[in-house]
Length: 440
Image (cartoon, rainbow, N blue to C red):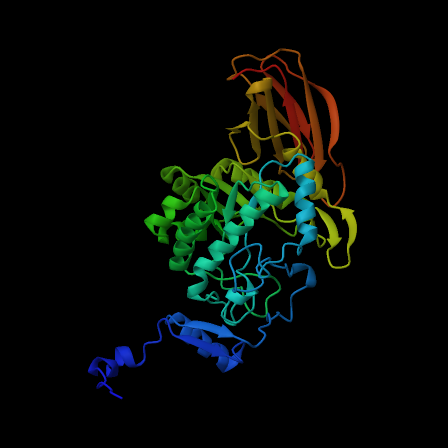
């Protein structure tokens, strides 16, 4: 028997404690010190296997209806046909999506509140204990793979082609905590940039080369502008659309976000708005501000069915009960039933009016509100349009922005006089007008 002397290089610190490509088997690595050891070895290149059962940590303050099952059960396999994936979960949301499609919805976005629980440092999809970043660095690519795999599966099996994929939800916020009331995850700017790059690669590998990436759905206009300025050039190049949430309400620099999108040649959505004002006053005010200063090409209300105030229709999602229709439901209808996809948004000249033009049907839509404490007669000047029909009837609908009152009442009692028309508005009333046979 012969033996050779050990190589001195084997005793250098870099080699002595190098675990790259080593295999480690843990019989208890799902939590505590064991989990920390697993994380330490994995991040340094070891291949780690855990025989103990890992369990998701659940916030004590989250409602069952806000816990959304994920499809990727564990990291054992990326193959969507393996036992690591369960495509039968979350059937209610999937059914709602398919029903929306059958009723005419034609634009779908896939987004994530949080990475899968097993990708999180504390196994809690509601957030880190202190609201800091909660996704393990080695799961950045896994999160992207997860999103792309769902997009591909939806296309092939559900008949849903997502227009875009958004891997974050209010990622810079520090209110996503382990004791939170929702699922969420903080992502640092560098992590956001990395995930965006991984997502583009993952979508391309699934053959979804034309599927867009949206980011970063920050909670406010100011944070959206800050985040945009912190993303890497590579991440920016991979983003097709900027998404922002409208929770800064009447404050914040909408123009800065619009200018960012304009200069980078990106589309822009207000991808989430909600408020607790059941009268619709806040909704109307902020929607008009968005139309005039943010210029989004889509505007999305947070949740139609929700607790009183927040919901357009009051509902208890855990009890499965539906209550009263809020006044704000009809206030939003003043916009959504008339300003439709493909119309050109026109500046109405103030923060109390918005207009849209339907070129295909030569139709003008005007939505206006009287914020005064008393009734007012408002005159609408159409003289800058190329063709206006004198004496034509103007169809109108009106809703009272208060706890009760008129709810989307239709009328046809207004006529154009020359190139204008005048209408009386009660205090805090919103009205929508349709003018036909008019040319820009």
